[in-house]
Length: 395
Ligand SMILES: Cc1ncc(COP(=O)(O)O)c(C=O)c1O
Image (cartoon, rainbow, N blue to C red):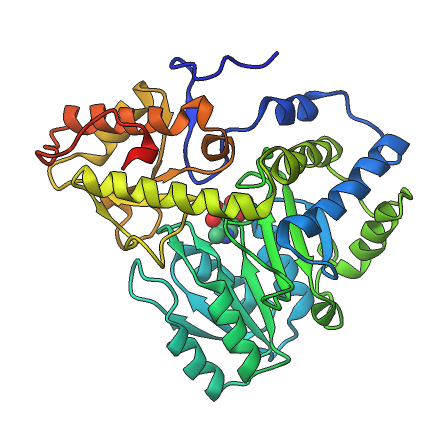
């Protein structure tokens, strides 16, 4: 049974993932599990692999759907594409770039980092300069650095990198982005892109989705057992040909739920092009509203800001813990800070999935209204010209 729309008593999960999931996705996840070689499941899995291509806009990329969280994406890339002594360039914008540097290093890479000042997107000129000093086997960029809500310009960086080093493997961590932020795998000549199911793909945690280019496929040399893509490839190929196969048991329910959710992205919400535009508008509206409230963003608005989530400094006189617990009493679960340098000074809100794409649910209005009440309750004085309770799109 579907939950009531815009129920003010329903607790909303508005963190940078997991997010609120559509009832049909939850229903698929809650059904009796099928055999992984059930003809119905084989067909669903095959279709899901095809859908993933449409989500990242590739014709020749090879999707992999593996049980695990987004972190398995870091490991799958590092353990399959890196050999001891390989050089990698990591665009470091925060917490999740530190994680990739750690992961690449463990599999033997010699990592160079291009670091951005806190809250700022990757500086393309700095990447270009590093690539000229290069060569590197792999370039890693995070699409949405979710520790600070930075949106990196994947297109410009990828196209620039390809010109300088035509054979470099360009890897995108799309964990808080794919399914919402503009990503053109083929047009931007990306080699690896991965995400976790629980973010903009709109499915409970448990699946890692990876797409590799044909260029990247030639470099696969696995260093681990479970993430060995030479074992996963025939499985993906078999299911796509609508033949059952086995390496390890797939997360059957989650794959069916992913199929339901991607069908919504590609069909019900009007497809990726429309979603990219909608998400840009929602991100901008949210940042505008936050600024109008007299708050400060961690990552400056406009280019360089992410559209799936926003990071906001607590006003000086507001206690972070008190504010978040007040928000929770208003049925809005938001996230605290994550970046170690400013962890206690800011909070993060997620605005992707059904909360963004189904405005009739009123999730984001509920979020803004709760922020208005709770900030006031915690002592924040709004600018004189701030008009509360306006629909999000009207600013
Ligand atoms: C950009 C980014 N990369 C990687 C991860 C790790 O994903 P997971 O927590 O699903 O392992 C996250 C999680 O929030 C993320 O936002």
